[in-house]
Image (tube, rainbow, N blue to C red; front, side):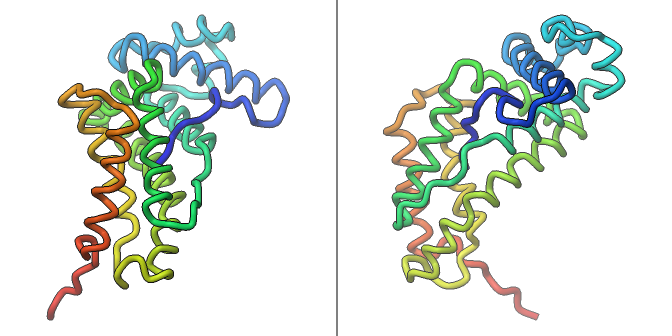
Length: 208
């Protein structure tokens, strides 16, 4: 699933409300990337965004509310899926989009901070799950089209295939620290495609 996007809010309609939201979400993303979730402070975000503290507290209320809105905006602004006409081509496009996002110094740090917060903060975890759900749904049709073309077995869980593409890249980001380059992205896509073709993601019907 791909997450690369423009700065939060930049493609939204004009108006003061939209400009304020864009500035605050951009400031929140910067603060998260620099200092992590534990040090995220609404007053500091307001200062960075050059808006009144009252505005930030009234609209978002809590740090978790602000992070939830940031993730929603990121999901909405992320680039749409690429359709190449082949399963491997589509999965590589997805993997490279994830790779570019996670290898970016700001975006990679931001995702680390949010994922870390989600392990101990229920509302942040819910927002993160919703974010990934949106992105998986965006790319799932590529896999379904491969099923329809006969590239993959009937009954393939298309969502699991999409998740399998990005999983190795997040593993590198969060655990090994190995280089996140296009070669790693392509290997992740190739592995997911091979497993899917072999039937690894076919839904198993429960017996009664």
